[in-house]
Length: 438
Image 1 (cartoon, rainbow, N blue to C red):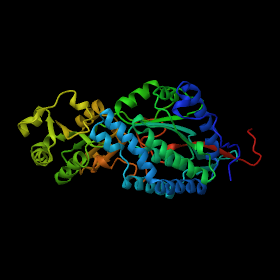
Image 2: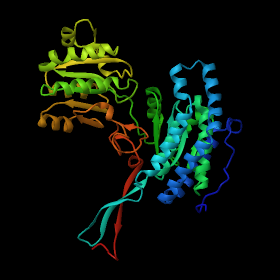
Image 3: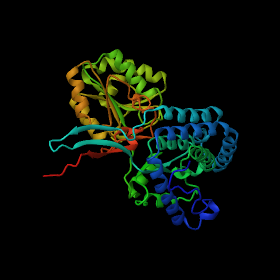
Image 4: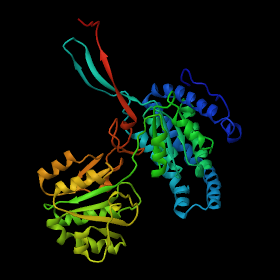
């Protein structure tokens, strides 16, 4: 059964051939359809949205051959364009990655639905009840690069949270994203939801991104996923609120009251568990009182893993022949086996360093001092602040969110990993029984 107000036919054909000459008209059409579909999706029930997610997962699995064929077109074009082996790997859809997309959608279907939840409902002296209801944001525009699985992940999170979405993937994945889009549309229709609840932009023309960033009447929030250059451009050009983070310059501070065995394990894991991720440690700060004992132990581990160390003058005096850390190093997100190290006098100097050079992403203190740990939690202004834990835990799955659409270092609406609740907002609801204000 279709929801009232939903029309199956699109206003225009969204092929590259038909829209190449009129991007503004095409994007306006996408926006209108998203807004209409969003109203239908917002009033749908949890069971219907879960049915759609499971239907999409089933369709993705049954369409594995078609997905791989579409992906081959992208890979061939990528090789012809000279894409690196790393980018080609991110672009590739294998059987296991297709299965993982389907599994991810089923996992999202099992998550608690935040939409419609009412809390803090209290009686006021006037006799009214006042509370807050969690509601979808509306229409979410997501701009991303390379990995086709983001199409399924983003669509799934938006559907579950009752939001329509407009997805603009990278040109290098256009065929793969369109094939996944057909699976999404089929699953939505089978559940009786508008296929326009999720629209994947069908043109590689870059001017479509500019149009999307100006569609204030149709799009409620923009979420970019990709490299720093992409996110900077979107942040500068968008007339729509953006949920984003630019850098992941994450710190681990080893206090003079640290358990050094814990410190060695946590610092090593924070850097080497994965290098090219935004929650990897990029700068290690060490209290001067423990530096002479701790740093040689860490040096042997990092050298074993071929991590290049760059240090302040005190660090180099303790460790010998390592590269000097420059001013630029302290504000660099390496995303590589490179680590900058600074010896500091105490926690205050460490927090000053984090405030000066950090990116408000994730920072951790290693200490057995209860008072210091709580000072660090209160005073370090990052979206995730940790005590005696690896920065690599800064992740939606590890936080129990089930999945995430990105990480926010902004201060408004949502900070840290953005899961289902982060894709909703709260509005006040008032319940009365004929009450009038005196």
